[in-house]
Length: 253
Image 1 (spheres, one colour):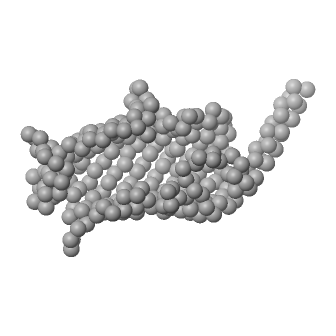
Image 2 (image 1 turned 180 degrees about the horizontal axis):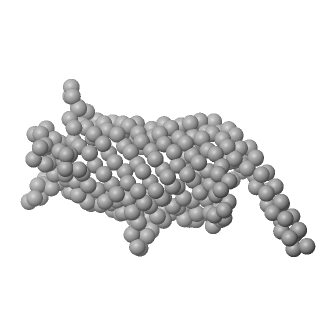
Image 3 (image 1 turned 120 degrees about the vertical axis):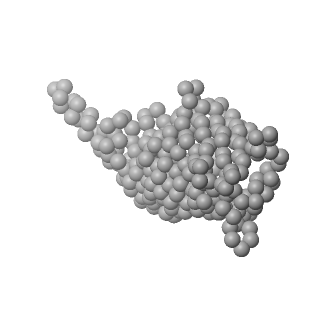
């Protein structure tokens, strides 16, 4: 009798999951999406099991295109549900999205790359004459039930950063950010530059659990930097005794 009862419960749960996953994605989005969602979604098609979005926009600018998702049945073994994602637009890549029973969202296996001008245009900074390639490899990025980032692990790179004024772009260098989470829950990005880069970079950016962020990065020209690169760094301000120019930023999300 007990075994039969569990079989009935399992059958009902399977039927419920099948029904939800087969529901039209546009209807589910219209019913459950927050009214204050900061992005606009257009061209949604398919079901919760498998579907696509033509474009995602923020403040009138497209931030993602051709988003596709596919449900992963194995995610039920972790008492949650998950999907494999693919996306294009300013950034092209793929990731795994998981939602726990407590409402915790997490991204893993994120691989993404894009052109710096396209990324800056999507963020509203299209007027700056900068070129380069952005790439990111995020092993873990989690958001708690209140929508706050709670953990981060991975790295990102800015390759071939150039000042695109004049006949030939002026190469400034490559930069890397190691992403991690400290013991108190602060997300930390440690900034550096490889020795081949004409510009040295040292510093970090931090995002605290309460939403306060701050960045403190020092940059200076290396011996192999051209005079043009040294002149560009002068735009930042005056260097300290060691020749470093300091970049500071602080605020709250």
